Image (cartoon, rainbow, N blue to C red; front, top):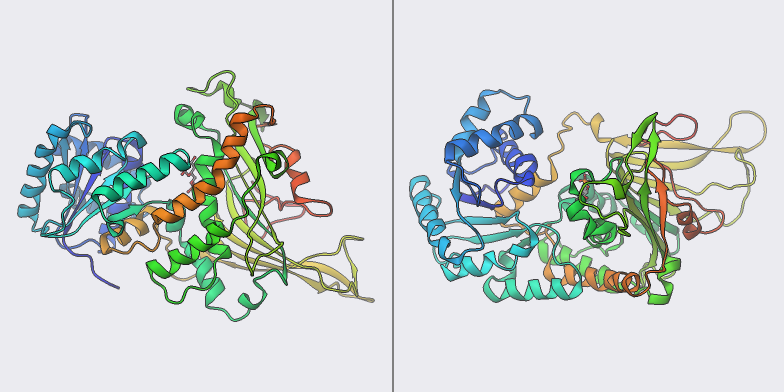
Length: 508
Ligand code: BG6
């Protein structure tokens, strides 16, 4: 593996939740595994007043609670904390960037970081277009002495126009290869394994097309509500929060053509082509192709569960969708006519992300099925989380006389590997940015192509408020109307916590 060079990670928004729960614990995990460069530092930046020492005290509990490697030698934490520094400043105020520049110079001299700096924007999105300009005003974007990279958190834009504008602003001061637009789904080990499953096996790819696949189903749901993120979420909704980015990236991985090589240009070119081939959903098709819902109060295992409109920061009359199911097509040679179904939602019965490839039935029904009339289809389930693994469902003869077929499971679970350590998404992505590998980051053109697909749906909802928002009781699988999307004789898979559980036993 390539080694990281000395560098500084500068996090804007350092007093925020993402830094506390994800970023610092991920850096710590890299530290424990010896993956950080010899000379390395994290400079937290924010308006809140901290000293280096009080910043370390603030983030230490996050490391102890959220790092994957927290149970390793506790003295690691003591050795890790001195790598963290803090600079208080207002990132909106251009005049204060001289403070930042002076601090970076000092740290790079002390630490020998050779001016290599990553800027991580973990701030409110309104600052994504502001901070890069201020950095540039102080020449902090220039790569004369070392590299300068900038990681931009989601949401990247609010719609197509704002995403384009943000790209334009960023590209007016940074080059595309300095920009790392993060989508943490691409950092998940199991998402990357989609490429390996498809392109390192001779048995799947020949079947991976319209001739053998009936439809593709992707689910990414959670068993909790919006919690204290109501203020943010109400301006976003499931389409912007999950579909435009995470779910479409999964679609890209499932549907792309084999890249010529494994590098950031080749892989991202193929993802872009998928997005460009998404058949636009016309405004009049939106009610039939896109089902939106919002959770209402209920009792889950005897406990009261708040409805979305009762959540903090959510207006009483809110029509923001907390659930979305949609059907669409990819108009290209491989996928012509194959429907894709995706769904996402808050407060469903369990937390699960998985992709189900539904293969076509055999051309002739030779045997009786143990399920009566319904014939079974082979399914390949790629479980992204939890209980990560792969499951293949196929027909097997029921022992005894005659030829009755039952469906059995063949499954692989990551936890069965002897070296089963799955790095967190942020750990993987931060390491990639440190190494200068942007393969698992979204490219500007792909982000715009994804917005181009999503934008007409947002516009249709805006101009036709009568398009229903269906209520669903918290803790259920969402509005019944989503079933009609899938079509007659088919159904969504209702996954359990454990990949291979189905039928009578199901732990949620
Ligand atoms: C985030 C969304 O990007 O992804 C959240 O803003 C969502 O609303 C989260 O809960 C889901 O990520 P994961 O990794 O828990 O599936």
